[in-house]
Image (cartoon, rainbow, N blue to C red; front, side, top):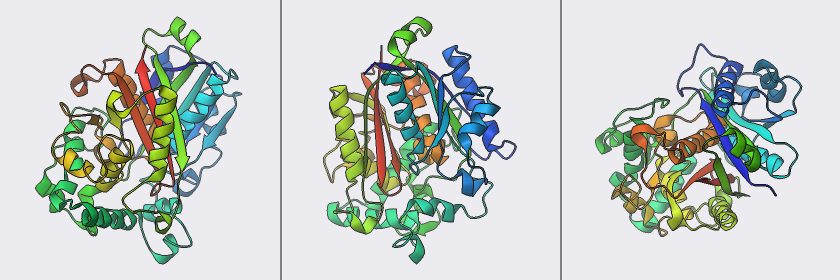
Length: 382
C-alpha cells in the first residue's frame, strides 16, 4: 500500500450554531480544508455522521454535501459508527488512497444536534436498544456504572475523577474553536447537577453542532503540493460488545485496547513514543479508562496519574490539548476528524499557545457507544 498524508484541515467553531444548517456547517469545514491544502478538486468524499436522519431528517449525505460544496459528480458516501463515525470516515479515506484507487480524498464529519427535541433518545440509538435503551438506561447511566466499578476496584476518589474535565477545560482556553473555553475547578465539577451518580453535569461532554474535514493524499503527490504533510503512520480499529453487560470487566474497554495495539503495530511504535493524544472523553471516567487501554498508564493507576498532572504539559503524555470532547465540544460525527485536526496542527507547529514541544508522534482515539467501536490513528511530521 502507498503512504498517505494529511495535507489540509478545516473545521467550524463548535457550539450552538443556530444560523447554520448541516450542509452549511459541512461545506464551511470542507472548503477550509481544501483551501488549506491548496486543492480545488477532490477525487472522493466520505462524510462521518451518526444520526442526521434523526437530528435533521436528512439522509443521503454523500450526495447533499458533494453537491453543496461544489464537487458534484464525485463518488461520495456517509460513514456511520456511532460517535466513532468521523474517525472511521478517515480510515475509509485512508484505505482508498493507500490502495491507489484515488490520489486526493476528503474525510469529513458533521452533526447538527441542537435542533433536536430529544437528543438523549437519539444518542441512545448507539446503545443496545433491547437490553439498555428499552429499559431507560442512558449513556450517562452506563458510564456511571463503569465509574462506580472503577472507583470500587481501584480506590479512585470522587475528587480524582473530577480532574480530567478540569485539565481539559484548562487546555481549551487557548482553542479558538472550543465550545466552552473557560476554567473549571474540582469544586465546579462536584457542585454541578447530578446526572447519574457519581457523574455530574461537568463530568459529561456537551451537546454540540459542528463540522470538521481533512484532505488525504498519496505521499508522493503530497510532497509536491504541500510544504509540511503529516503522514498517517498507523491505524487500528476494533469492535467490542455494544451492551455494557457483555463486557468482561466494567473497568476495561477491549475495543480501545485492540485498536491501539493494531495502530502501534502498523506504526512500529509504543506508548512511550507518543507525545500527545486526543482521546474520546465523552465522560470523565472514559478518559481514565482509555488512557490505560492505550498503554499510557498501568491499569488502575490512570485516574491518579491524570489527577497528579501526568497527562498535561510537562507530564508523561499530553492528553486532549484541544480541550477534548468535554470542553472543545462533541458533535458526534465530527469529533474523530476534529481530533485529527488538533494533532495535525500540533505536528505542524501551528497550535499557538496549545503547542506541545519536541513532538515525536501524535495519536487520536475515537470511540462509539460504551466501547462498541473504536478507531486509533498515529501521525508523524515528515
